[in-house]
Length: 394
Image 1 (cartoon, one colour):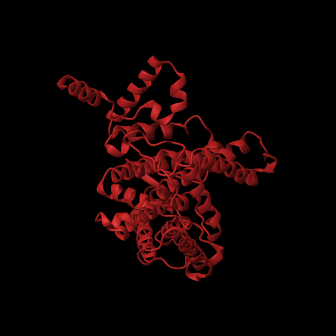
Image 2 (cartoon, one colour):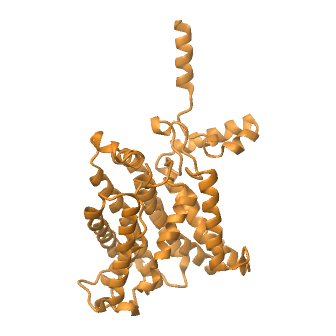
Image 3 (tube, one colour):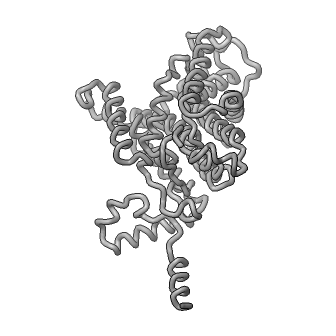
């Protein structure tokens, strides 16, 4: 009897606790030789043990993708990078906390207009004029405060009702900017300065025609957001989000302050969007209400769903599919997608992907590693888990 218990205990002890290759691509794992699979699993385990260096390596590899490309393709990278950062933030709200937000781009707009307000742009009034780099925390904090102001009276709602409120919030922000003369109304704001900086007597200039430098900035921001989000997911806050997402009725009975945790999710998602707004404003040098249509919120939400609800890595992949793929097809000379023009074809592509996802893999395209809920491995660039199900549904 004692031998049987010892054998069972040894089996549990020897069971791998880190992410395994078959957790991510089970279909591929079934057809590759066992020796190759073991090697891939060892690579995954070694990657997990790198700790914070994973973010540095992943960020360096991501930044290096721009080195062999020219300015036109770097521009595609930067445009996609805006939405990769947005998808990371929305994934906190939709994927981790289970809140359906259809007005997420409003915080993107708030971050961009905050940057224009506190820099030397042609806006009608400036409380104070700062260097663009010093405006980063200002844009983040103001977007965060906007998320709290939106969430405080509305987060007692759930599902479709919350979605309608967030949609209305987006239109309020957009129409206010369109009609408020102090922010130049529908004309938009011009002459937003680029974040030029002098290092050791050498001036490092940024410009519209130098997208590669902005891609490097975006890579730094994305890795910082990934680190923060993954650390939060492993904390009590992250576990509270999971409890609320799985059963919002049972969560209060477990002592979880539901409204407070929802506010945290909204604030973190909004601050990430505000950071993306800073990059857009300083890169383009011009913003207007027309840059932030409701369709952008829908597209970011689709990127999160296609990549895998709850997966930070999936959110990045989904943004590349939704925003980067059509631009790459345009660059290689493709004028039509599925018989449609490039813009309509993009809608057709991710519409088809959404249908396939909901039929065959409603949980996610990047599955949750086995045992992740019980202290096992984690499954993204730096320890990500994936949420099953769709926000707003218990």
